[in-house]
Image (cartoon, rainbow, N blue to C red):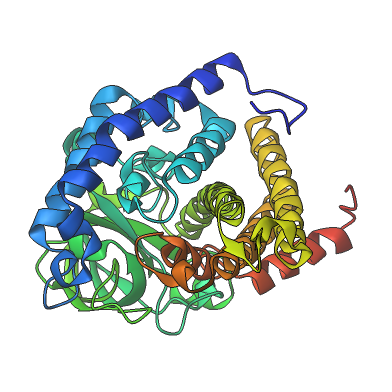
Length: 412
């Protein structure tokens, strides 16, 4: 694995990780070079409404399909769905390698492996047989894409505050409500949407929320607005509206009134992903900063010789090493069948916070050049700052950790 980690990855996972790197070098790097102007210039990357331009969507789809064909897109998807079934450690290791390799600039790499919020994962194990026949094949091939509609204007960290309703009708339901912060909904073909189906049970926090698989071209569904951030003219997040959208029994995911657990499963997968993403981006940023410090001269010496430069990078490296170990451990525990609620919460919270600090230190080391688009450090900082909120804020995760401790889980 590396000289810094005392235990290696299993041979099959190491082989997959090496294969993923080869795929990214062969398929992602050349596309960034070929389409550099389109992908790097935000004036071309987005349409007037803020969504990705059709040409960008086409390149994203190419990456998904190429990875599916190469056997990497579905590497951690359960075998019951036709995936590789390699588990959480493989998922963590592959994502960490991708972001360590690609840094903040080659952002297409995020589509090299299926993510729970846009492609096949354990979340789809409970879809109906009809959905397996009609929807799953396209997703597994990377041809189509999904998104996950859980957050709402009044339901963020407390997802049980969902107000979107699915009213029972003859032979199905009609969904009405609003979703926000839904990643990739402007370009998705399907959305898994969480909606209240039993208001009384939902009010008592005893279920009452169901999950449905909804096509984004359904009558009554509309992407209302793209949410712009960081001063850019567009982005992948958007707000959408359901106005009496008709869904049938085959579109139900899992058991009626028990959809909240599906949402929480997705969030747990996201925490593994974001832990790995944070470590990978931070390692790339630290290496970039160390290399620059050995070249840049000031007052007659390379700046690496100044403690004010070197010691903060040493602190950042220490934190990321700890974050790496936390992520590997949580992933192994999950593969062994443990719920690892405390450990996964620790890994995600610590990794994303340490990641932000590491990238910030890398920017500071570079001085003004650290803010330039070409380095990708600011893109990495934006990403890491955002995922200090995504899939559970640091404050919610601290609450979760301490709740487990109060229950007697004091193993550290």
